[in-house]
Each structure stands twice: as structure tokens, then as C-alpha cells.
Length: 202
Image (cartoon, rainbow, N blue to C red; front, side, top):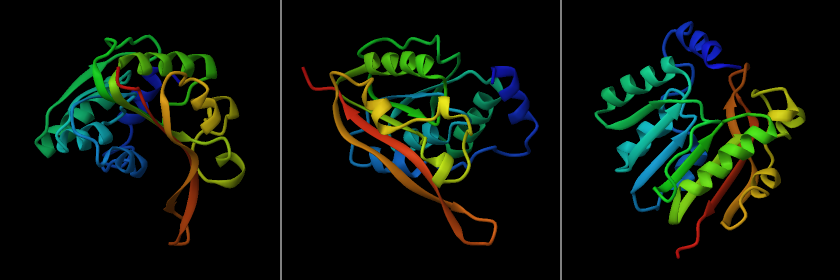
């Protein structure tokens, strides 16, 4: 799906397409880290970027949908925080190497070669001692979960992400359960890949 399609999806939806609250696995992965500079790749409407800024991080957020970035700006203004917003295609975007203490890739689903390029750029952007967090719909979600893309070629596994993290120390790599509201008033589980890795300090 290209940026114009996402622009149309966001523009055609009253309010936020996604929650205004941060992803639970992002929160779990970041709580306890000392705030510094952070990069949110494929930030969407900015829920994670805005939350990070509220925790004291200096945040840059990148997404290819200008409509989503506009909503992110509105959310940041409403929360009284500052985020450096950028409209860019993350498959071509190359952050300055050694610039960030935290890099986040959250629910970015691309064919494997394109995702590998984004992951490599994210790795290079980390400062020594920095943390990379990757969260996304897991391949197992097709058979055992709910929601998310139905194309196996764009879904993640912990193993596929870790394969692209040579040189980093993997702290967490698992398929995690995320409860979401069900149609009967209860909850059902979505299955997400969650990977957290750090660049060794030089």
C-alpha cells in the first residue's frame, strides 16, 4: 500500500485509526531506560512517539503519510510535548548513523528485502549502548490470532528479525500474546513478534 492509500485511509476515518495510547510492548521495552534521543520509524499517527516524548525522550518520528503525521502533530500538541515530525518513505529514509539511544519499528509490514533494509538503517542509527525495539504482527497470528495483515510474506517472526541483528545483543525475542476486545465483550489474543536488542557500548 502506497502513501496515497494510507492518506486516504487516515483521512476517511473520523478520529484516530489507531489508539492514542502507546503499544504495550513498547512501554514494557522502554520503561527503565534513561531517556535520550529516540527515532520512531513508520510512526503512523504518533501514539508511541508522543508517549516517548512525554517520558522525556527527544523524539524524531518518520512516516510516509502526511495525513498521519498531521494527526501526530495534533496529538503531540494536545499532550503538550514536542516531536520532530518528518514525512518520508522509510524504505528510502536513512537516519544519521550513531545518532539515537532508542530506535523503534512498530507494526511496519513489508516484503522481507524491504524490511531488511529498514532494519539495517535502524541498526546503523543506534549509538553505542542504544536499544532497538521491533514489534509487529507475528506469522503465527494467521492461524492462532486475530487482526493484522493476512499476507504471510509481510509478517514477522522473532527469528527473521534476529537474523538481521548481527552485532547487537538480543535481550528479548518472542511471539507474545496481546489481548484485544472481542465481539462478545470479552478479549481475544493477537500474536505479535517482540524483539529488543542493544548495541554494545564501544
